[in-house]
Amino acid sequence: MATSRADVGNRVSTVLARKLGGELLRLREDAGLTQPRAAEVLSASVAKVTKMERGWVPFRDPDVIALCKLYGVTDSVVLDRLLGLAKTDRDRRKAKGWWNQHPALSDMVEYVALEDIATHIRTWQQAIVPGLLQTPDYARALAVGNGNWDDPDEIEPFVESRMARQVRLTGEQPLQLWAVVHEGALRQLVGGRHVMRAQLDHLREVARLPNVKIQVLPYLAGAHPGMTSAFTIVSFAEPGSMDVVHMDTTSSTLWLESERDAAREGAIFDRLVRLSLAQHNSAALIDGILKET
Image (tube, rainbow, N blue to C red):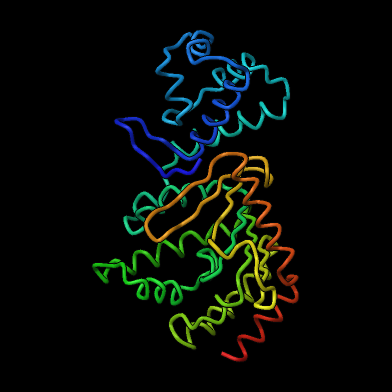
């Protein structure tokens, strides 16, 4: 299911709630049961079941447990995963994060809120250095280059918010980041030679962090499954257990929330990893590009 954040009256649809609601909907349909039957078990209205399946409301653990029992879910791993999603969504809804005070983030608010509570991120970028790895000057040059800013004064708050996100890479429980970047993104002179030299040097430094993996997909890899779009897989437990996929297009932000979609993008990422240079060879290529820049 590909959707973006939505507000429906005073109900707020969130990525994680939609993911959980979608999985409960699938389980109900697989069990051959109706919404009225689910509502009966919850001692609630059909309208409440509809809101839950569409991700418009936070989930209570007793409701999730009751529905899973009704739907015949006997696997404790599946139940624990669904309860984990419910808790993560409740925590995300209550969070009073710094991102809410950054208008420059605009459509990125939902993504940054999830990034803040994620455990792992796997990202594939074909044209640019990933946001979590950008220097201020590189981010500034990108903002100027895309030409979407009506007011140039809005660029600095945007750069500040991007740098604030990078705090997740350090600390007691740092985000585990695995970035695959195309060689072309490292050779593109964003901001000119001085800016790119500093950006490449920054990549060398951050790649030394134990929680960061950077691999480069070289030109010599030829055709590959990531040629049509960049994407980021956000995980809230071990990768593969609770994943959502974020994609940016020129006109909108897309979330792929179903288990099937997440698994497909995860398989594409794995394929890109296999086609990419190993970490030490990637570091050597970055060194070589830096010397040429």
